Image (cartoon, rainbow, N blue to C red; front, top):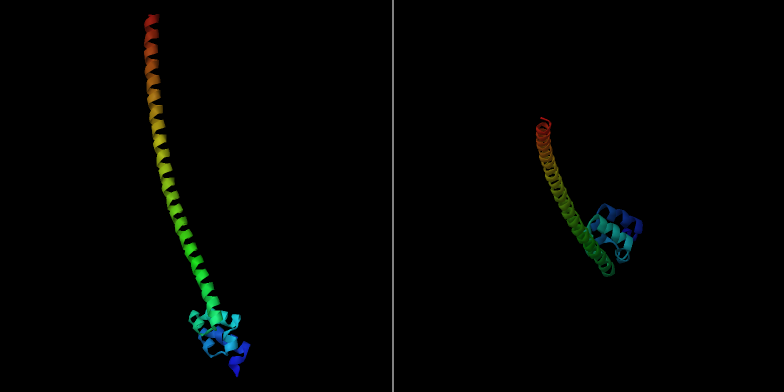
Length: 129
């Protein structure tokens, strides 16, 4: 019977994983056959031997745990990215405020220097006259 033939069943489960249901028990207990069947259609797992059902369920559980960890890391990364954007905005605003303050202080200092120069010039004029 063809359903006992490894190559025949492997080709058919690659086309439709649900073909695993027709395979012989030995092939339902073959890791590679079951792997390709569930890779094509996860629902084919129901037709695997009990031993391989447990093996692949454990693999699937581990994969789901890893996916959850990846999702959490992506969320953390997104939060860090958002925080970085906010920090950059705050830093830019702070730099803008500092520059504005420096410009204002510079203008005030120049005005004071000009005023002092005017006072000094008047005193010098008074002394010379």
